[in-house]
Amino acid sequence: MSQENYQIKSSAKNQKPLQDKVAIVTGSTYGIGFAIARRLAQDGAHVLLCSRKTENVDKAVKQLKEEGLSISGIPCHVGNEKDREKLVATALDIYGKIDILVCNAAVNPFVGPLFETTEELWNKVFHVNVISTFLLIKLVVPHIQKQGSGSIIICSSFAGYIPQSYIGPYSITKTSLHGLTNMLAQALRFMNIRVNSLALGLINTSFSKVILKTPDIASKLIPLGVHRMGEPEECAGIASFLCSEDASYINGENIGVTGGMLGRL
Image 1 (cartoon, rainbow, N blue to C red):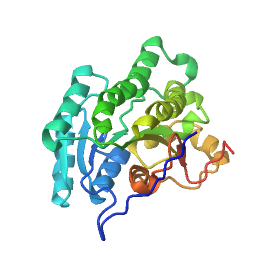
Image 2: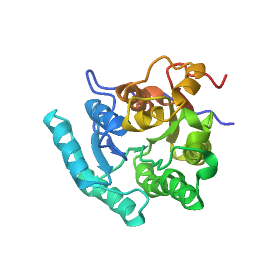
Image 3: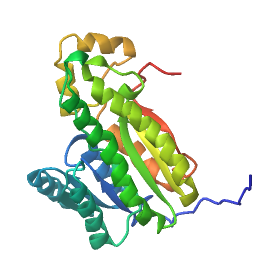
Image 4: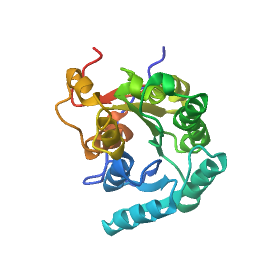
């Protein structure tokens, strides 16, 4: 195995860690995605955010621009091929390059008994959460490669480690994303593109609130070590770190952001 001399690129004094990087963040008009988009921009990146509804995109862009951040937005359903292509084309039209991709968009249309799930439900959840994530990454990779290096973050879940029957299809898609992270990290390391995922715990979002309203769910979570819900901002910092030069030797990792949730060594 050859070993090349490697030196971490030193930033100019007072330069932000993601200065002038260009990032796409999917599912980013509220919750975790919004917090990540904001943090990447605060750390110097130009960010293209997106979600399915135009009004949500406009509201998010307006709010972050009022904070003085470099933000653009576009409606995008990641499960739609033309929307994915338009998303990538828009980033290139506005900024001329892509350095970072954060895949946060996901669906979970069902909370309930596992054997009440349908084939249609499984197809929908896998198409959006796994297949579309891979296809978007496939679209973006050639453009990140042109920059000589870059970072891809996949937002997964602790449910990928500890599948929960009441969100069965969703849980299994997150297990699949852990595997996809490992596979892509190996496939793209020769391009100097790092791929990591965030195995997110119980975060204070509308999705988590729906889960907690399900009978007996809270009592099942207590033994897992949960003492409070995390906040979206507590996920955003680690995402920005993983996109920075400080994380240059972190690749193929599924990093738990769970507040100490049990279930793995």
